[in-house]
Length: 149
Ligand SMILES: [Zn+2]
Image (cartoon, rainbow, N blue to C red; front, side, top):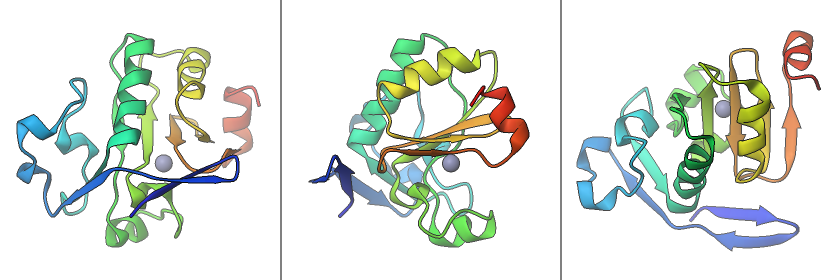
């Protein structure tokens, strides 16, 4: 079970796990601007679909009104370790997304993200969003400058 913690309250989330994203039936995928393949682990193709997180991603996309390129979403523990992800990364729970900065203005992307997500990682070339506890980080001084933090 995956839980969402907000303002001291804990909510269970609705999730489904698949050993490979190709096992998802079309009727079980309700997010028109995203495909199971782009949300699945880039290592082994496995996926944890968290309905509330996918709804937040689709709502953000609808508000933005432009394509959003997801470079990393769900990660298996093995893949997360191999790509240097944090041991407690929200990518392991299927509630985190890295959104490429491509033909999107930083301020506009962040404004839309803040309406639907609670955790933010500010990187030079992408924005990390998640449904974890409210917090944010920037890994470099350059990233802080770019995002005007
Ligand atoms: Zn991330």
